[in-house]
Image 1: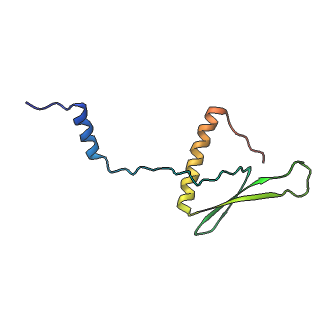
Image 2: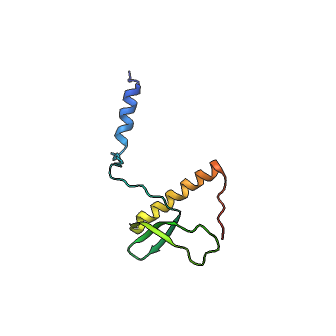
Image 3: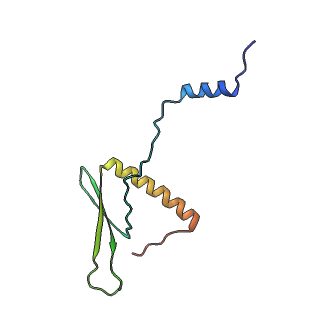
Length: 105
């Protein structure tokens, strides 16, 4: 007579076919938080650089707008592409929940 799979036996069988998965632990003990309402992106063959800052302009008619840069993030192109995909997904979820974001030209 064949043995029937119990829940534990079935789970053990499934675990055998799943490759080892690394657990990611996010350590935020040294994390800094900055506010940014301006971002610029620069790129070369080897790296993508993100510049973050805050627009200090209070009046729309100013001839010069000063942006105080606060953070520079340098990524390799692979990490930048993964970030672009994550941002795309998160923004689609945001717009599905709260409505489409319309940007000025």
